[in-house]
Length: 173
Image (cartoon, rainbow, N blue to C red):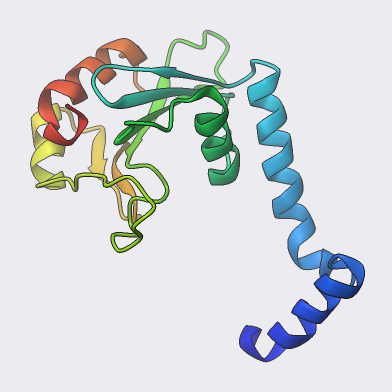
């Protein structure tokens, strides 16, 4: 269905900038722009963690869009040499002392054949990494770039989680 619409979509992009198909792309585009604004305003932050990891502090109960995350990495110069990303989602509870974590490879890591992309080492055994984390609150991620996620908010601070993951995952070294 989408392939059948592609010629019309491309023509509309050329003629009007995509106005006729705006309902299909506007929400995602606005979300990406809002997330980029959150990074610029300091509501979300990116910093170098241990090894080749970047630690991303995300706003309460909202994961940054892949576009905004990648733009933030490039803008801050953190995209160079990064092989792992630890997303830290602050809990929306009143005390803000709990976090949900998502440990992943950079968004382009699933594309193994692109010559222009930095090679990202695969996780040798994601299930083993989850076992080594030693808690029932971690699970293997099912996404193309995901490694593992927490199943519920935990109190362990981001610095401790980043340090532990750095010790356990050779791809972060």
